[in-house]
Length: 460
Image (cartoon, rainbow, N blue to C red; front, side):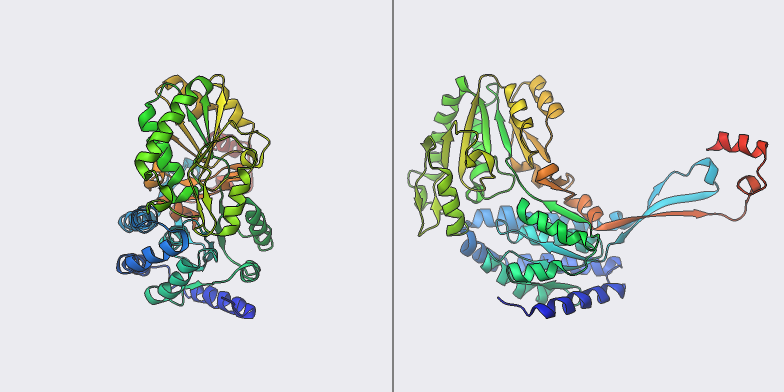
């Protein structure tokens, strides 16, 4: 869909002017918009499921759990907590400033830009929007053009449910996004890859606009021999092959002791058949790759690799089977680039402690998983690695807790959101001190005497 590029500047200016009217600040306005957003998800659930099936062949189960239901849960948490989050946050006041009260007052940033991603095209637009609305902002939304059914549906439905003066969805591709990034915003949130993130940051720097970047990277999964192997394998399969591996927090590779690797692979092979059947291509619970360009990229990763499970693909169906690679060359693209697909490399080490050094030689990941019953090793991983998020003995279940911030570190992103953290991300916590005029000692006023200096030393 092509948009008149000149219209973009006019529309953003209109949204900014609307924010300046202060209509978005009251609790009632925020409550109404969030309630309407929830109503949209509930009433239009069949349409959202249909769009997700068209874009990514998502099953009804995955569409609900990872997109629609997940977003409704975030909304319910926000609606429950919003009034409390909006209240001034009192802090203590030192004796030197008494009598006074001190607090932080959350206020909206203004007009924010949210750029979504194609792998979760509903959740990754509406999730940040929940935080932006809760904080009292106006927003411009840019859904991914690579998931056109979802983008078209959002462009159709959002204006029907939300305030048209406060929110605008821009469809389009590189030209439209480039023009959008020329405009002045009060905050930009981008979910996607590192390359585009650098473009977003450069554009934001022109206006000194703060950014939140939710990226990805190669998230490691450590499997210690001291683990419940059956449960571990089941949870890794769920974490890795949900959405056909097109998840930023999917495990990008497994680290495991060589002596334990064949047992792991045997259980993995058996459990894949148990979950998806002998003919995975016909299984409606297994998704598809977003487009043929990404499928071709993934197929190239398999060249020269030791494929021990899967590897089958169908370009017409955009299908790539759950695929497992054993001990890939560490300098191959498979181990240097984020996979973002249904390929799982297994890297063997002589002892599991070597996995920590292996991880630390690489950029900081968005997620890190460790499966172990060894408390000492668990603490070693927590103390000596850095990642945006860590989960012990499970996969991406941490995403279900709105009290846990979600975000990256280093190359995997900056800033975080979800729950109260999302509210804070899209708010300015304004510092306020209110002082009484009943007392006004001359201690801080000239002339300065030695007695005043000695007293001030004691008070400060």
